[in-house]
Each structure stands twice: as C-alpha cells, then as structure tokens.
Image (tube, rainbow, N blue to C red; front, side, top):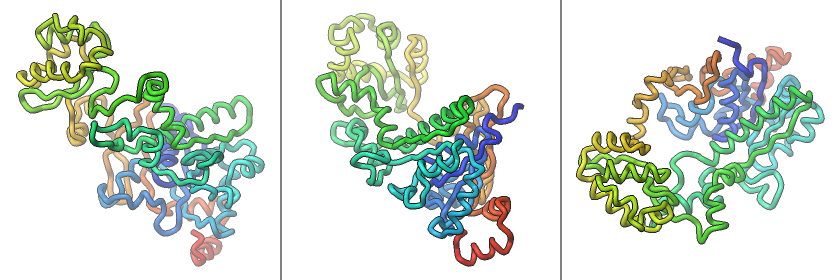
Length: 394
C-alpha cells in the first residue's frame, strides 16, 4: 500500500462539537497528523453528549478517531505560547470557536498568516465572520430553521428537523474540501490561504433546488413526509406483509414500466392526471390511492421483484439496526475497527476509496492523552510541565 496522501501534513485544531471535528477527522483519515486542542478537564463538550458507546459519546467517537489530544487553557500566556510554538510547524489551523474568541486570542487569520505565510487558516462559523449576524451563536437546529429546511421537512401538520446534523456535516464537508483545495494551491504557489465556511452558507447551498423552485415558481414546495415534494410517485408504500417499501420514478419510461408490470394496467400511464410528472404531482392523492390499492395486495418480495423488472429504483425502509446489518456493507468490506479509551468499536471506512491507499484508522484519544509528548517535542522540560499542571494551564 502507498503512503497516505496527507502524510507529513500537520493540522492543529481548536475544535468542538461537530462541524470542525468532522472536517479534521477526514484529513486524519487521509494520513494528516491532527492535534486536537481541548480544554483542560472536560475537553470537547461533545464528549458528554451521550454515553452510548462503552460509556462514551457516539458523536465524539465518530468524529475524533486518529487524532492527538492536547489540553491547553488558552487564557493563560504559557499555554497560548505553546500553541504558537505548535503553529510554527503546522500546515493547517482550524477553529470553530465562538464568535470573536479567535480575535481576542490573536488567532484569527490576519495575524497568524502574517507570522506563518504558508499556513492554511480555516474558520468554521455560524453565519460568517462579517455581516449583521457575525456575533450570533449557531447550532444545527437553528441553522436548519433559518435556512428554511425545517419548513420543508415533515408533514402538512408537523415541521421536523432532519434526523442528523446536516448543517454541521455540510459545513464540515466544505471546510474539508476547502482545506484540500488550499493545500493544492500552496503546492503551486507556496502561499497559504484563508478558508472560511459558515454553517448557514453551507446549508444554504444544499437548499438550491427548493430555493430556485420557490423564487421562480408559484410557491415553496409543500411538506410531503417521506415523499418527494416535486416528483411523483417517489415515496413509501405499505405491502400486504406490513413492510414499507420505497420507490422512485424518475422518467416516463420508468413510469410506463411501473404501470404495465407493477400496477398491471398500461393504460394508467396515459391517464391525463398521471401522464407527466407535473400532472402526477398535482394529482398526488389520486395517484397514491392507485398505488396503495395495488401494492397493499402484494407481498413484499413480489413488489420488489416487479419494481426491479420495471426498472424502477426501490428499497425497504430500514431501521438503523437493519442498516447496520445491510448486506452491501458486509459484502463490500466496509466495516473496520478502531480503539477507544473504553474498548474497540466497529467503524465504517471512509466512503471515498483511493486505489492503493488504506484509510488511517487510529484510536480515539482520551482528554489530554498526548499533552506531555507534544509539549516535550516543543522543548518543554519536565519542570515546565509540572508548572503548567500546577497552574492548570494544561
């Protein structure tokens, strides 16, 4: 196997919660050395979100494998000096500190890049570092609400948040890709970069389709539960066995095949109410009656087989437990193992496979696990470490 693509790259991250840790974990998966700076004592507050994984947070073990944990109280000059020594040898600095905190510590982009011209400085914020909302805190639900996602998700009577932290994940993905782009740019120019990503603008990009539909159409898409708001049929249906299957018609060829092979009546395809996708969306209730009447009389395996024959994409509505046992994950060898402070856990390999490269899957650190080793490498003596501990700077 080849050396990991980011071997030799050092990332220092003042991170907590989800967005920044998600970006840096992906850099670690590619071989970067990621030094996670945490508060002395409790560390990243995401460590305490839950206790479901051998007494540890499911969020934390997901987001923080392969990292080194360094505890520093950056309000103390000795700790801040240690951070600056660390940054002198770093390639990337990432933070998602509260609004204004980086500036108060002298860690925003301008002073750091002046001291370290090759440094890539990445800020993950709620609403950006400028503008009228620069000083507002932002968490995933708040951003889902502010971007309109909550208004699109749910049923006619209930608005709901997406079941995962999509704003954080979106921001983490753009921070990750932005840092990779900056590293590529530095290879060509020798210069560092300032990368900025906000949760709000990351999720705003993901709202592209409903945004255009709303601006140029008659109104915003309706909330339609698990169905697609602007494509039909595209959603869940219950079979005779009580299982829920999902199907997704994308074009008229698939619609015709569904009518002929699954519904058993080719003439439905040319019914004026259903002949085009806009017509099917407008007459969704009648269309669903036709589908439910037919599928509720058929066993699940028959429904899935006929959908396959018709060339219509389909699947089952799985629980998370059923997903974990999915045959695709097993057959494609997607599971691996990572050590944590409280025992090994199963983890999914990163979704992007690079030929000839294995992902780096090193342990999840305990709070401050690597503090002494990192500081000794920066020239701190045992007496220095003892003083830092005595003053609770580490």
